[in-house]
Length: 154
Image 1 (cartoon, helix red, strand yellow):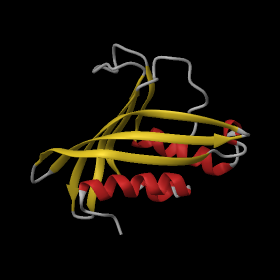
Image 2 (cartoon, helix red, strand yellow):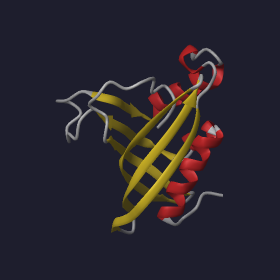
Image 3 (tube, one colour):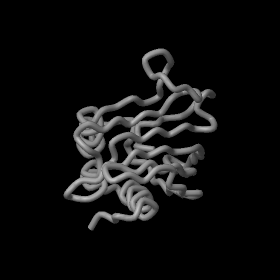
Image 4 (cartoon, one colour):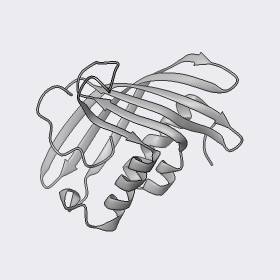
């Protein structure tokens, strides 16, 4: 069951990623969803470099590749732990909820570990099926320095 509380929804999303339940994670995203990871703290992906700028179709392609065994950059697959905190509801309307939070991801793979930290902005649509991500922005603190393999989903 998908939580209806915005904070619980973010925790649920993190849990699905950590467990590798990628189909269930993708189901959290609306058909018009945008998932954006800017390289810097910018507000216009058309004018600046993005680490990720995916729509729902692109996200589906990522999930298919990760599950196929042909994502060689993920052999063996990353193990992750997502820590979501400082969850704040910024706006709560009848149709959507805007939620800001902080994120820390520990990734372990091939005897190496990486830490990614930053701020998240979720715009969640209220649908008959429950909350769905319409827009997710992850602004990494270290997004403007050389990063490792981000093939896994932040």
